Length: 178
Image 1 (cartoon, rainbow, N blue to C red):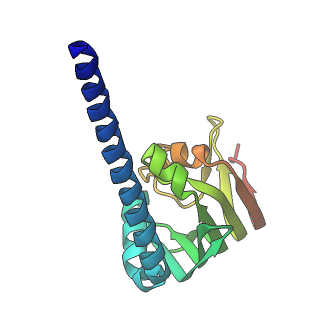
Image 2 (spheres, one colour):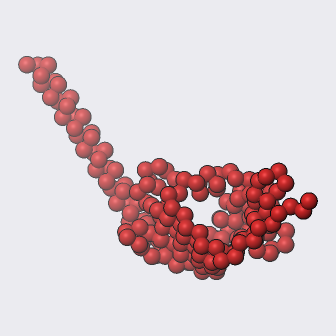
Image 3 (spheres, rainbow, N blue to C red):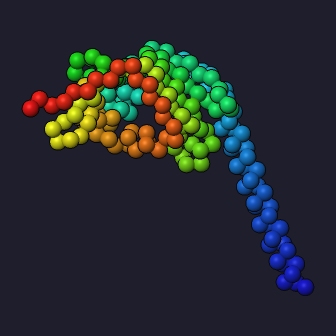
């Protein structure tokens, strides 16, 4: 009888710990959702800081014309207009995108601990691809050491996204001179 009571007390304490853990996770999820709901509409106010952060992350200068945010099917969506990825040396455009829409998957991002999207939509892009004699293809105008050019974390992150729509208005293909 004594061991049965001790076992019941032990199970009740485990149940209490489990309940507290579930409650804590629920409060954390509510807090994150509240932050996303309150801070997300203010994202356009931080355009200069976002330009700077993305430029550092990609190791390539970038300009953003405007940013707008909205909710699509319960998921936050960021729409960015007039995105220009610039050549580091001449400040000419290596890539231009008229409109870039990124729909964030908040639940999957929280579960995996990294930024994941539901879809990425690229409209009105202008880009030039170079086909090198060695066989690889690069985006013209990118510095060889940039994060975009050397296919590191950015390429891996991009490949993890479930849906990417690319609607190019102008694609130029350059072959090497022989």
